[in-house]
Length: 585
Image: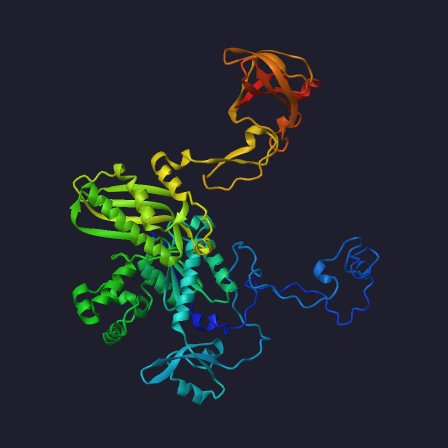
């Protein structure tokens, strides 16, 4: 079931300039009352001495003994100011934010925004004081000045109002719903299908949205219904701050509303008044043909959109436009040379777009559309962000064997699925004649195109005492530094393997003989032990765990890295079993 929310901001042009009515905290509470004392006297605490129980604050009756007062009450004090983004408590199912102006608010001169219409300036938006004085939108500025000589007039800026709506819609996409769009000049549209349960239901979502806009000093009316037209009409003409229509009742909800709620053009509204059609319910039983001749086909479409007979999609804003290159071919292609040329052209077009936006591609997705309606997908990854068209084309050419043209390919699309900011490259070494650092990223990309990126990696140290946890795989271009000075084998087993038939003197001698993988090794030299304790913060079982590592060499010259569990004295440290962990050379 589709659910659409329409957010109506009736005073956006005025409130965007901060010239709206005075605002109180949305929950109606005043800020915390702090003691005000113009002459608190000499403080008994020396500068930098901090608070002590014998200080003047501790002797006050308002502060309990041996309890430090809040920090803001110490030293120089002033009136508390409620932060505009912290004055709202968490939504607990209360009423919407109050917009009442306090009685003590000082009177201000009427303020209006003007816009040029034809040969005269008219009121575009008016403040609360101006509306109370009868200065309504559409009134000529000259007439308004004649009524109030002290009228403040500024030029309206619809472009900035629209930009503010776009920013709110972008915020909505990132925090409220995947589909949100600005509805100029004074609203937003949100597709809430499958999202309101994340906020505790539609009612809670509306209250939180009203509270959020109140913190931005914006007056809001919200309506939720099944269609865009019904939600738009109810948000502007229901007279309530929050209106939620149950599914399937949109027609009954908008029936008593005026015809103007259907977003009709001025000519259609004039014709409706001429024929005595004042409310939506008057239009519903009329035949579509005669009604279209009198009001126009646009009015019929708006009515059908409001009642759900005609779909009205929401074109949501996109937080980030993915760089994309497309091409459509005059004739289907299927040869290797033609597909290669299409890849080259798409890579060049995408590189130009990336260069214009200051980005570099890290992951490319090529989609080839065949004439039978199916699609072929090719994915390419890069070790480092790049916008070199030739390099991108070479990587795509390596995946030609994955393309099946079928009966022919008629279109292609190349998308930079993952892009990163990429600045200019310094040419200092070229200008001075010094040797430039060789960039191996193109080589790594070509090798990864054949064997995969997972097959190319570096080993990097990780901060851990346990050997199997002290090494991690990183990308091939990662800078690795900080290896420990302890000797470690070149080849280390992923998991230590047990040794059998071990002969060794306890507690500190290396083994003299052991059997590993069915082969008996006679040890002629050994070094150690290197004691490693367990990481108790990782597992409780490692609180007392101890490993004694030895470097040993057998009669054939093979060198191994073995360890014994336990210190050879206390049984809690290990079971004295021997294990193979790696080999040198």
